[in-house]
Length: 117
Length: 113
Image (cartoon, rainbow over all chains, first blue to last red; front, side, top):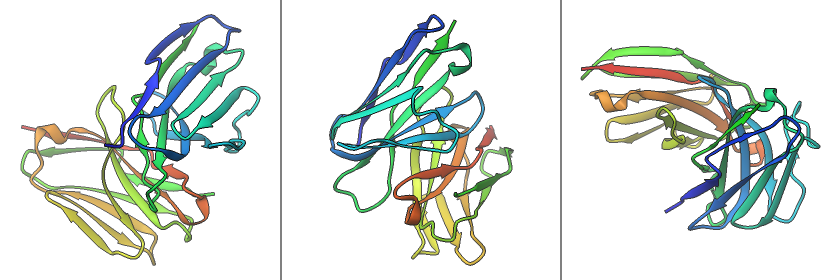
């Protein structure tokens, strides 16, 4: 149980284009989903918290107009990187926290490798 | 906000030896401390977690200890095996963070056969 999927696993795009990444909880409902960014050999940096039916909460320093988050249902959150530039190239990974759990346990998706040319 | 420090950044041990990774946190309101294992190119996997009403938790070869007064927690792996080789991340959250987790910088553990 507690499986989280992410799509696509890899994406290459041209500078200036927008890219959408989907995060789905496959076998549970997620009250909250989280989006992280991970640079090579570095830690997971929390970008934003996504709650179903409400606006996302962004961490300090993360541009909300650049990283658009939509949490349309209890099993789906999307991250759109708008007007992507080479410096946005990174590994983006989501996590989901089960609705029925009183804990703060997060289950991670497999991540999306974004390369902006 | 929460700040998590993790040490060491790299750790090499011989198969069968023990490995210890230590973390400190800054927000005294944090009450949830998970540890994740991430193999190269894969997602982080939760291996053990502890809440602040518990001082120690053990699961087979893995144990975690928490000292809330000192605001530090540690991961202990006994009888290490080559398949334990990975990057391990500690995290702190819960309490005032509303479910958010803040991660340490990670420890690259290498277990030599």
